[in-house]
Image (cartoon, rainbow over all chains, first blue to last red; front, side):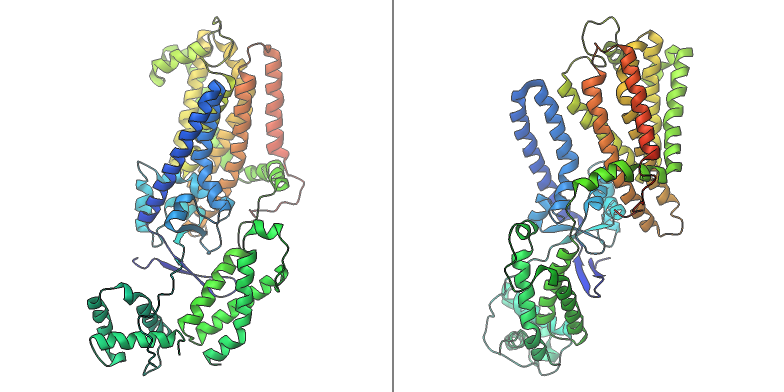
Length: 226
Length: 334
């Protein structure tokens, strides 16, 4: 239940990685959308107020569109992202990882009615906490999933230029861990760097600052800097 | 093969694919510009499959994350492109309305008849009950609502519009769209509560409409009331019943999924319901249009209104009954 990472095998036989998004970023995205929708309504009401009774009718049509059509249309034509989801780096995808189509977008947004019950998306919150992939009821019925879009992390310049060949052949996951250490350790405090590097003592053979430097060297080697 | 050799051999392919993605990924841009790159648009599926195979190989052989992560990223971008939503087409929309929607409704005939019964039986019962026991109305409706209904359909009133106190046609059009379509869509969605939501909505709507009709008939405002509702009833009442049927199907698939997993059964009913909702929204849009611009016109004589209503009822039933009958259907494909 803690692992929200979902792997889906595509028809081509390779696995797609779908990191499912939890309720908090989704609620934030929804609030951003809510503010945007309110803003549109405010502007529309000011413009349409000048048209009198017909304007009032048009305002209600706009209200209808903003309420029902805004999320459906944006998700269907804009690769599964409303403005709020875009801001939070979220995306709606089909359960099989394909971009979300019109019908699933319609289903999941119509069923917000149920997820909103009895107040403030309480049903949706319970459902998404109970589901391993954080889906609310509408997502389950539509067969969709909200995922984090992979953040393009800039290649952090290596803190040192040294290159060190690992003393033993590493498994892919171990290589991944060392490379990730090389990319992310510069963002950590020195004490935390040492603490993490000490865990890799069987690999580096030392402890303390020299272990950190050795891991950086191995990360450089694994990244192909020779 | 060692990783360096692997990369050296296929590097050029990956770069070409990446370049194509960068220049041609955006559909609108791709349609307006000619493809001047080395890779033709028609080669992309084959190249994408090749990339997938290379990714699988790279994983199997345990190449380092530098290679696999890059291939993975390329693959995901390609995947999103290959399987993206096709652009909607107008002809398809017309086909859907004329043929697929009636076919969908007929395919759920059982749920539709059940929804119709849940709606019509309380309506008719309430109507006749009120002819016999008029004071019952105060048990079902709020006095303010009764007074408003009486004012709207007062045969002696001087105001020129039927069925409303005030408000222009356009204002009411917006009001009907917002209200009625929302009610229709909610009728479907509340089916997810084991169907109970839909059943309650149908019964309460039936009771409420039956009570209003029965009361107005009983106090002698029947004529303006029937003239008002005759026009849009064919679309509005049918749409509510269809929404109810779709909601019942959703609830039923949750309660009794049959030989499918419960989640799969829900997905089937949900997608079907979404398609039905498209048609329902269209029907309610037509109903709102009629209600705002035709039903409320005082000057049209009763016989025209009732004939038009008869024609519309016939049309709606003929549409739902015969629509798409003799064409090869696309079954459940979206």
